Length: 300
Length: 206
Image 1 (cartoon, rainbow over the protein chains, first blue to last red):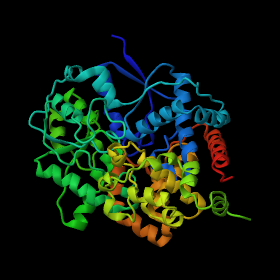
Image 2 (cartoon, one colour):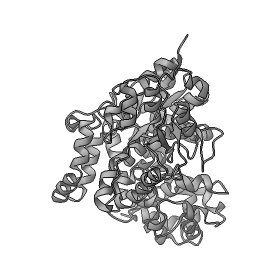
Image 3 (cartoon, rainbow over the protein chains, first blue to last red):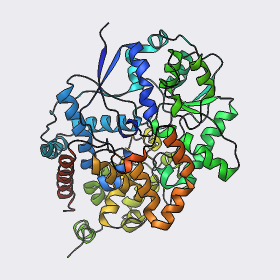
Image 4 (cartoon, chains in turn red, brown):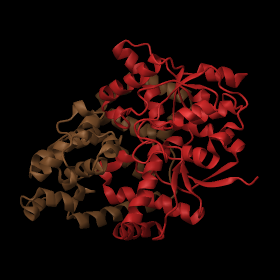
């Protein structure tokens, strides 16, 4: 079977030794089993993210995206641009839409791109997609279920979608207030998706760093609700959500006297383990709070 | 020498809505706000800011230039996009708030030392320097923003988390000397300088 080809935009946090390194590790087994080939865009740069606005402004931010789009179009023509990070996906997709929408913005972006000897064709309309879209739309839930050899029986999971994997674009056909796709993926792996009222609550994003107390109040709700609903772990499609919700539990425990110790993993780690991946292949050795239930299944 | 702020005041007189439409990202949408307040009730940092987006938009129309540009509200945006997807008039509220923050910052009117302004600036600088964000240097820059002593205190307070990340392979101490980088960083610097030059010219900030 020929592999499905995609241009891959990893993003800063997914590089080796960065905060979501284990997320990308967990893609390996999935791509093998589902015949997906991710071709890294050569010399990609930071997507500029949402937080870049203060110093960046509009055009410099969009130009950061335009360089990635132009590189992808030049080296990997016709391949949809896929990212595992919702912020990268959002930035790439937003840059594409804004440039398509305004010929003057496109002209300005191309004037700046001359400095790196690149040009974005004015009819550029390649899709920027999140990896969950590839799984849901190109593979489908039945296709995702086919390689499952170790169903995650008896594991109760809170599906935490967060913000940018859901807004402003989200997954086609899903609602912003109560998206179902993550729960469906949990069930595809044979686990149980518990009802979870903090599914689309913001974790504070980049402001978890600059406004720790305000963000930690949100994270306390996100983790607390997972406990209230009997979850063994939280699963998320976003590197920043994963980091914030996992890392700050110890801080919240110190300040608020809670006893949080809730593992926070990626949907790809669930699939990986269900497909027979080892602890290392699933990146479970990259958790600050170890996901013991998953490790037990992966170690069998 | 006249400042960018004085030039803008002279150019737009007391028509602040017109100024926002001409200079702020997606600013032309502001007049479409129907004051329903859904944005105000949808913000995760709602309890913490001075004015809701709803108030900001009406203040713009009322010509309250100083109050808007000096407000901390735009800096409280976590980029969750909740206001944007719920707005019945489909205003790109998140982008307008970012645009207002950027404009206020460029005019030198934004609240000095506002922590989210500091982080936004540090993030952009980190992304530009190597073409990719260096998470270690970015974190340290954030901890040490208020000087060395406070920086050491901040870093010590978070050392457990930092060591945990190193152990988990998600933070590389070597990033302090040799981190991930783009090959064409000098090209990226020129490209962004050009983009800024074009935009400043268009916005009358040059």
